[in-house]
Length: 248
Picture 1 (spheres, rainbow, N blue to C red):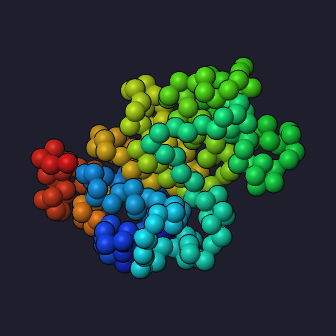
Picture 2: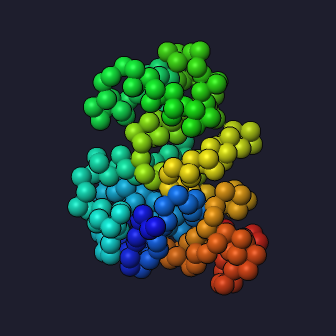
Picture 3: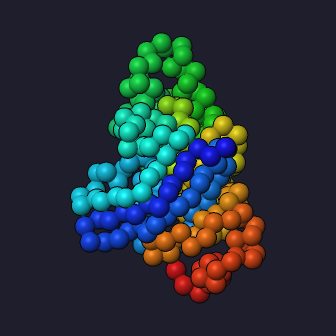
């Protein structure tokens, strides 16, 4: 089932043509890896899916982005960002306790029952592979956590509002291999319930977790296919050159 459909999407920031005629369908319960060199349009594409680009000055857009066949420009932006959550490259915990970081979103959306809130927090922390590490110190400040733990806390904060799609923008860029492995393991388990789109500069990570991979270059979607095919027999020589490290 197609959960997100992007059709002939063009994005400009002033005179900068950031995305050019991008057409792509994203399926429910898949992990889509998005790769490409810097300034290829990967993050612009990701941020378009929950309208974070709206915050950028000089934005002009043509084409359509549909979530479950509804144009995202007609969806209330708060509801859209509840359905399409995002985890950023740098962990940004709130200046609150571990518990309150995760509970923040559900409270904002009206969940007040203490028992249900506690259950939601525990579930999200378990899904983010963090519960066992923090269950005895939930009321400590989130800033006491390590960088890898803070990133998984931000994952839990996103999961706590029960989105349908999770966008990951280079979530492991500053993490050690152990923390990276935990986040990748969490993604592989989360796809049973969520759709995941992962922007990464680590082609090995893209190959490890993505069922399909999309390659962007200079604002264009060069090709998208099953990950194994992209990494072994890409259709476009530019994809092959990038994967082999000839540029990027």
